[in-house]
Image (cartoon, rainbow, N blue to C red):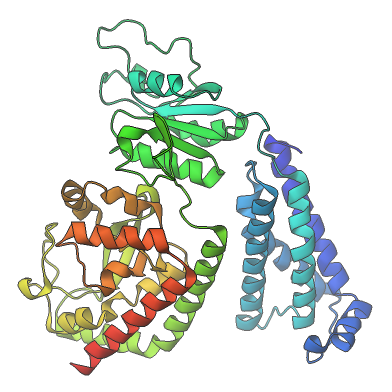
Length: 468
């Protein structure tokens, strides 16, 4: 095992070497002939070998695409063997699709199909093995880091755990001090005396959390914020999720997070950062990509027609964009066909029949959900999923949180184009009902559950089209 900069250099150099060797072997005439002659499924592929400038161009392009696809694996993060294999396979498949697309659209560069298939097969075997060999293994000795801004809460969680604590990471505290010298430090005591945390190492501000998790091989993060409504609270959860680190929180905050179970746990409870099995994530992502690709191609003519209709119906842009909340409180830009006149928006949810800003074409688009079609691109890029809790406007989210206490539990999964709440007609005008359906979906999600929801949504859209 290597670490730090040596890991980055070793992982990149190994990827370049393995990819070069795989392409060299795949380009060999003997290997090409064996594949296309002895393997029935590949007999229709022509045996083609590249030479000279063609081979150099193919090698350079392949190295660039493969290395670009594997960038997340070049970061020195602790990984289990299965995680390393799955992530590498996913990235190699992505590289293969990219190379096939380049060959399809650019006739000046075309990696022969037989060479492409052989190269990808070689990389699917060799690259996972390489990253397993050099991976940063999770430490055999458990250790924890405290992430928070409240000294009393930090001391409380330390007393409640028997895991060795290496130190604390803290964002600037808005609760006790506005002194710039306290940035990156938890609050001092109200009387201005010494901090009660003098005996505990401060490992830096929240911006260093990723580095701290790697440097100290941390396997548990103890969250100790004065209130869980800070963006930094879910930012810390996001970092824990990315690094495969367990997260614990005080029982008082269980309404704001998904928990594994609270019945048999003490003061600290485990946060369920991954509410689904990895198989569900794999099937879900494959389904999302296939759905988005098929949808974009199938509705391409409709997209053009709708764009023209929106432009002719009322003055203003064709598309409407809005900041929506994603996983762990992150935000992303949602694009839809504009269905209202471009005037000031209200954060208060309202029914469509009570909104006089909706245009004639917009009314049809909303009833049939065709205004959502541009979001297929967000699904393809991974910002959204086909099925999941509906992404809410960031400004509106504040009002909904005040009405539904456990609203932020929706943040633990990727937002969706449709969902259990949508097919049951639950809207933001009734956030408690909407939240109940969203949490039910999170608890029972599966590939077939997603398929059933999509089928019901498609049926509802078809019924809406027949009523126009």
